[in-house]
Amino acid sequence: MEKMFHPDKFAEIYDAYYKKCFLFTKSYVHEKQAAEDIASDSFIHLYEALQKGEEIKNIPAYLLTLVKNKAVDYLRQKTIRMRTHETFSNIDAEELEYRISTLEGCNPELIYSKEIQQIVDATLKQLSPKTREIFRMSRYENYSNKQIATELNIHIKTVEYHITQSLQLLRRNLKDYLPLFYFFFYF
Image 1 (cartoon, rainbow, N blue to C red):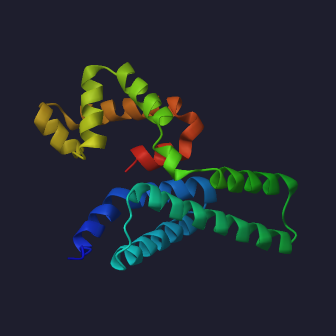
Image 2: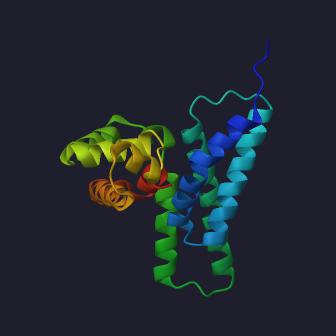
Image 3: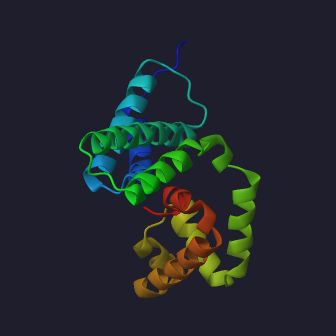
């Protein structure tokens, strides 16, 4: 019996990854509308692939590959348009080329590497037990801030404080992987 794709499953994927894909893309293309278009196009492509019955083993890596490739295409087209209009300064050209090359060098399969996981694990160990627990509940168990506050019997502002502390430390420790930081920890 063939395994059928269920649209509710896609809604869960969309809810979990759209904002991450958007933020990752925006960190490279620097344009909100373009980032939204790229993220949306990537989800359409994913939906169509799932509808066709394609087996996708690692959906986050698949999505990241889609947004990466679409962002590279967008930046290349932008380079061509800017060169055509001769309004392209050397600094703009270098900066745009840098964004293209770093995106091309991004390997979604390696993102889930031991190196990054070790940095995240080491960072989380630096947090107080309470901050670590709140971060875990928020980012790994998808609890809302209100749910965490209720379960731990603390004020919602306390939850927000602990999450902010966690994200600041992770951002510092993952500075070499900043676009990926957005993909993994912001939603």
